[in-house]
Image 1: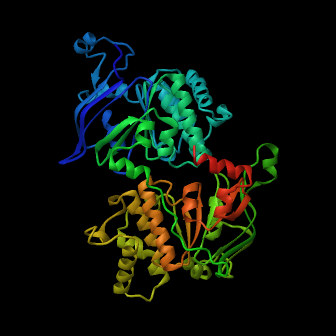
Image 2 (image 1 turned 90 degrees about the horizontal axis):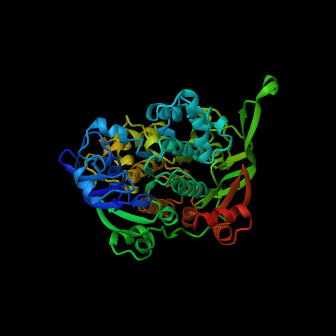
Image 3 (image 1 turned 180 degrees about the horizontal axis):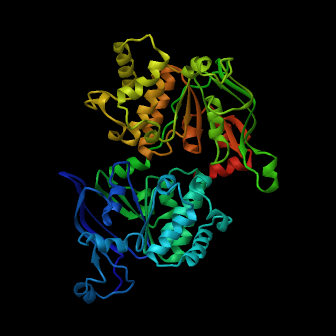
Length: 545
């Protein structure tokens, strides 16, 4: 008889007296693709880490029966604990033999999961030598084979690269290669596509699908991306606040959801609620023939003659008017972020870039008035907010620079008003001003980042992938907040994104960038509904698999 690879029975996880996973029960079959979905804080990642006791300070109870054998008999299961082991009861020494070897993980952000001081090849080879006992030379050849299996071009050359020298998609492929090094029975992919653009997401999911079939392993996909679930999984489990609320085949759960929470997740699309564009609104930011280049090393004898130049943005023109949103859409490496940094005066550029008729001077004292007019909200608020500063210090920091004449009471008043404007109040969060970033959820931290930008009363916000790291329901809340702030304050947004749904909800005008060049531009309706360029059609199609 064929028993499931993993049988979870009344599994509970608690930190101290607080239980965060409440008696969940499910099974995972050999070679199955199972998706675990829910919002941030629903308990998805905690559940997966709890199976193999990778949660410091947590206590687990219930049963997690692990049966790596493809075929066992019921009699053998009851009498032979070697074939079926309860992971909850295993000691640390026994779990070490399972972690990485039988159960492997691919995490959300490879840049933090990979060691920046070692080449990616050395990091994969370390796993092969420790877990599979390979000699260094044998491990080196296996590294190249694994990288080749994951679709990385020139694998022998990439193996010698450091993580920062690879693109986001390449780093995620390296993480998959490292996870596959020991040929695991179960691959846990924890939000493996969240930080990637739409076409790269599809590539990684297709890669996981082909590798799953080739290696015959089961995959547990932890995600909040329902499109990824539709594209990849056989079955889906839905978690809410540590409780398993619905499960079943993907088609059944996503097309005919029974539970109110599942229905909420599926319908968490952001309605478009922006004021119509005014053709005669004043121009706040204007670029003509804008170019951004980077110095790069040249190989061989050419390196003796000096460094080369990489052109990140080629001769770009745009206008951003008051109260409007200009979306810059494209894949990783298209030049979007380079454009954003140039618009913020943080990156040297050629051509013309004016903010209300003024240029960045590259002198701090002269640029100070412009920096008050143009503020930024980054993709990951946890890395952009100092962990050593409390809320009051974080939000008031820019205000103390741009409004030095205010007294302490004036600073406090502006901070509280701005926090209330983004939906953070003392009544909902007691001790709000003295809290630190780690005490908030991802969506709440992004609200803090928006408050930090808003407190100096800017005219333009540069939004660099402001929702890509958030789940669908929190994305909706943040985008609705940005829409409301634009209506109430007349803000202009330069929106950098790869998410077509965000463009559709927020933008008035759209620039589509590919390899540093604008390949299409126009109103949001014209670009998204009747795209003319093949690349634009590819991006729009990738958003609706």
